[in-house]
Structure formats: structure tokens, C-alpha cells
Length: 130
Image (cartoon, rainbow, N blue to C red):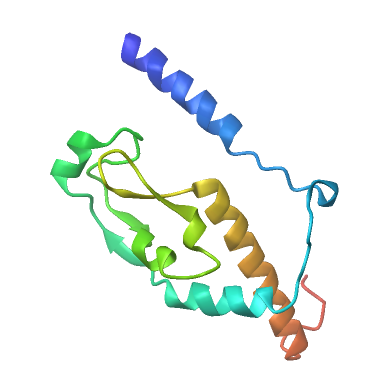
């Protein structure tokens, strides 16, 4: 079945694209000044919600991510309005906003780290996590 083969190729490409160079030797201008606090503040502005995709959007979707199932997520427009997060959003050929999942995952990881460090600074966490 040709559509099955196409989906396998798309999945393989997506898995490869999900990797990101993170070695400090590959980065310039590493700064932590207030980034954690700013990221926490921006993430707090992005509200999660339950939703279904509109059927007419599924007809023009080329990502394979739109279906009739219920979802939990965020709005690209909420990310787009935040200075540290707006580069995660792009617009596809159909005029719909898309989120770069790889970059969003990295931002989420950074926000979790910032929150943990904030909790430590506030004395809420003592370093014993077991």
C-alpha cells in the first residue's frame, strides 16, 4: 500500500528532524542572565486548552497531525506574542500557524529547569528528590 510507505518515510524523516545539536561547543554567546525568569513569565502567558480540529482544516493539512480526536495543546498565536518563544511559530503554505515541536520541546525543558531552580532558590526543594 503506497500510502503506508509514504507514512513510514514521513515518520522516519520526522524522527531524524527531532534531533537538535545541544553541545556547548557548538554555541556562541551563552547567557543565563534572567532567561529562566523571563521564560517562566512568558510560558505563564500561554494557556493550555482542550480542542478538536475543524473538519475543513483536516482537508488541507499536509503534516499528518490533524485528525478528529480530542487534543490538549496551546495556540501558536499565544507563543507568537512572546519575545523568547515567537521564533517557534511559522506559517505554512495554507496560511495556518505551526509550532516547531523540536524547539517547543527545548523551550519546555528549559522552563522546567528554570522552575526547579526557582523552587530551590525559594527553599521549596531541598535537593532530596527521592
